[in-house]
Image 1 (spheres, rainbow, N blue to C red):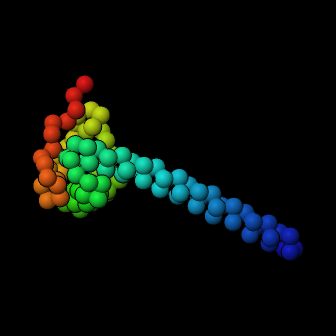
Image 2: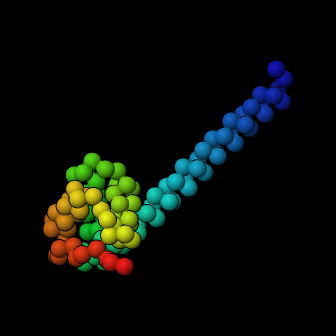
Image 3: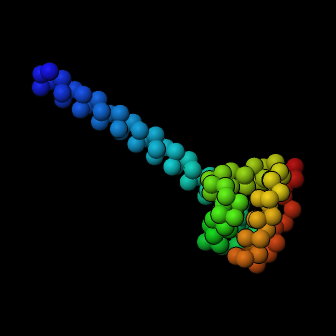
Length: 110
């Protein structure tokens, strides 16, 4: 192999690495937006601070053994459709009892 082909492979490897990194960053930004929106819902519905909303999401995730992003997605669906798994809702209520001043009000209805 000549010197040019080795450099070309290195360039190809670097492009692949950069494409993978860009994809990871895109996924992180999307995940961050979902979590932020769910925190906003917890803040509004539970009448807690953003820090308390974050703590509530972490607690629900830990106590249900569901990834935090997935808990956030469930909360967003609940806000939109009024549906949430019973165990997640129960843990959400318990977490709000631990971190906030109020019970969860009824889910929004159309």
